[in-house]
Length: 145
Image 1: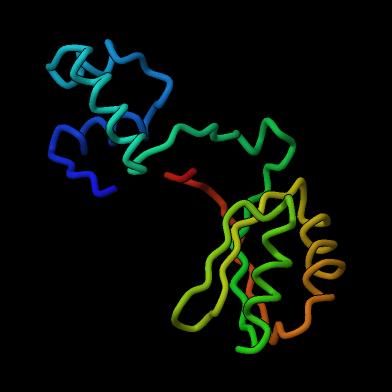
Image 2 (image 1 turned 60 degrees about the vertical axis):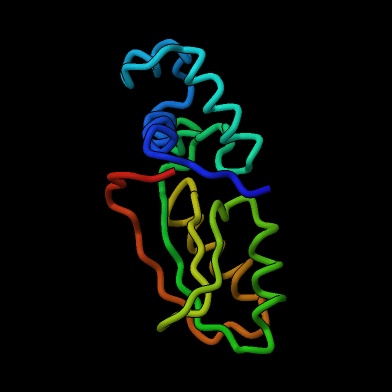
């Protein structure tokens, strides 16, 4: 199903990305339209697969304040198995096959650097085909999910 969106739809999405918990009335006031219009637009965006409402947890409040990006150099014949194995780990919140210097990038949430070390040794270290990994600790997240 192809859904055509316009500037108002994009503005609705932008506001919902800031706070999806806002009422249709609150969104309507910010957009200068009526609540019924917002309700129809949101329904169209969700039914068309252009948007979905999800919970975004606060990692600090969940006891996982350490966020890191881990970039992996993976052998071509191991890409699928590495991606599958990493995607099953609760610590991995986002995972993508990429182009460029690294083949796979994962975003992980952990309680501490010692847990990161354990994850790298006990979980990542057991995966066949990982040739190298580089860890980037997130010191401050300005925008993200």
